[in-house]
Image (cartoon, rainbow, N blue to C red; front, side, top):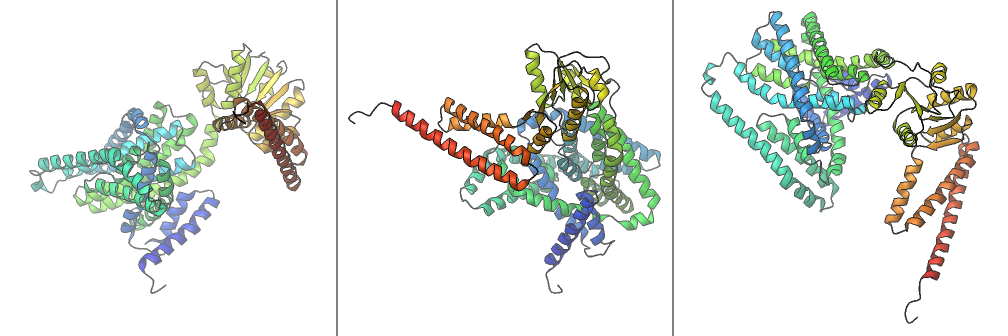
Length: 612
């Protein structure tokens, strides 16, 4: 590839490194981010030196973070964002202010000049939006309370970046001639910022939707994709011109388009680019780690990294407790926000350019942030392996296991969505229930709504005895875990043979396993609701309500019969497929015959047309 252009060679290097390192890292249980970072270290200046222009690659790859914030904005309509204003500015402000003051105070006590201490603290107080959102997305934490709380803090950090950058010139000590120009420059800068933000808001409201509608009418998918990227690039460029965060501008654009009819199309078009550029960003972070600084001052580097990680972790954990982040989520929440962030690179480089930070201090701090971004995913693996299991098995002191014998005729194991509906029906009929759930957060939430839910694992024989299984008439088995539900069935069959079981099956395999354990009253959790939806569709297509109900009933009876016929053969895939095909053909023939009969009855009932 001697005569190949540079872009082709670099693309080959990046893609090869990612394709090799990421699957290997995932196979070792370390996660994709560590794979990308390791790939960057290997191909970077301190590895094989296949790539040397790290700064250019890092700036380009930051666009992955911009695209990610745009997609996050598409998930938040303005009303929902407005409802989050208190956690964003309240808890976000508390995190940035608390961490900045604590880090600055620690640095001053250690003998660092106050200006350098303040700049270092402001940069280190920020967290990695890229890593945090990527991890939360992988773990499906974004819709949870802890995910929303973390996102609120991360969003405030992006907002806080604006005054942090504006503060840096004021801290410069060597350029006295700028003092007279500062007030006027700041007023002009503020006006430009307001004008750009107002332009984005008004443009998003008045121009973007008609423009996207016009482009969509061309029915050229690649042009709509190009327009999607142009939208993000243009807004990011505008924000960059006035010294604002590109990611913040992209997020704002996403929010403005969250209620548009093109939201899903934009997400579909941009998602692949976001994933690739985020991967490139993590590779660039790995390449940017200056091992020369590490080798020159290993003890000082280790002290900075672990010092600011521990101090931030302590403050953030205290915030998590105040924010009522679920107990089991606090370690991950803390670690994701304790690490340094990509925007710290910009803060420290800008501070060095303004001569607020000496070049060697800026290099040391940039290295510390990069190392923290490398160490955090490794610490996350350790948290998953050793700390979270202890948190999961630990429960608040107030939630004692069920200890007083119960005598209700209904015993409900599991108080999730399924168990809650069954419980509400029973209580509405005045039937007492004993409810067990082993999720401490669920128990606390249920009690706050007035339900008497006991903490306990229904797969333990002693707790079943205390819950009154020997005297109860029916057990509703509504736990999520398949293995646990089968274990509970075995316990009940052995020790409480007179207790009838009504069980929830998560899927077809679970249904068959429960039938193997002689449970005859098994309900698939989505079956009945799917039939109701099918009835609604038929009615919307013009079928009468009676005909739609009759069709749904016929399908239900056929499907239940089919499952009974399939059950003896569910371990024999070929035989099971044959039974399913035969059953489907019988149903189609039966339905066709019924349609003909209904049409004949309707024709006989209709009066003859005049003159016929």
